[in-house]
Image (cartoon, rainbow, N blue to C red; front, side, top):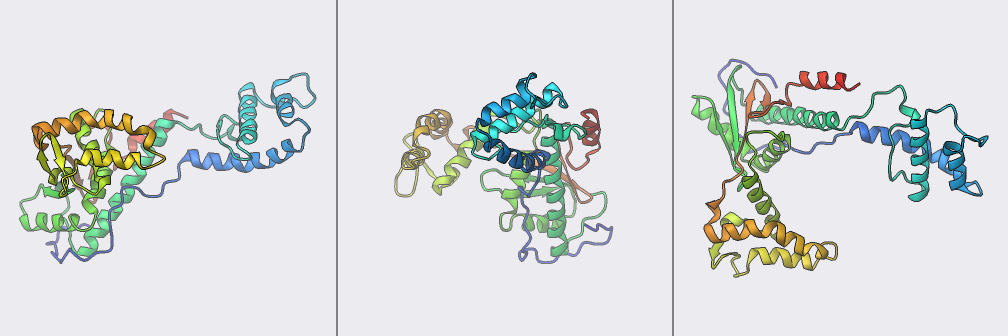
Length: 319
């Protein structure tokens, strides 16, 4: 996004086809490595299945040092990886159900580190969302002066976005109007939530329990914050207990009916606490993030997914 010190152009912001998306297509190194292994072992699997005893053939290659088939050119770790990958192909009918990435194929390639992969995915999503916000502002004709530090705060109940950090009230309201159109607020909230580190000061076990319940009950088509509270229940307009409605939908689903008791135990205490004491008896998981010079900036945590010098250093340390 091009940012200048010129006076912002406050164009109408209600008409736009660009939306923030919290989940953008990301191809992880795990997925890339798995595709390489699948291509390799597809051919080997065909050879194995032509043997009279495929299991014994694989065992001879990787577990029997006295067999002429024994792969002495591989390290012990690589033989174990090959054994697991080839037997996985047999178990899953030609599909690589379980992958061992210590395969000889990757001998000279960087190891996969789960922590680095997770951080890398977050940084990728942040780059995409930064670009999407930039496009939203550009299409709306809104320019934000260089160095202006704004804060976007999202309410988890209706995903409304409030903007602060500037004395220019007109600028703030125009950005709010833009973010509160379509599903932008909901997508921004989900992006912030997925960017939270475990030690983030924005996290709260109690507030997260409430948010989890509200999100789950939205599958019934109802918003808990808008329902009548009566006799220790939240009632739908036709008088149904919304929690029982949710559980009944699970009971009617052949894939979920066996988990009704677990769902009732998990969500029940929070639901009945709110039903008894009021929706505001527990705090809401309000989330905020700063926005400076075209980039979101994480608050209340160590890692900032818009400034990734630390991630490159971490990658290098794991090689």
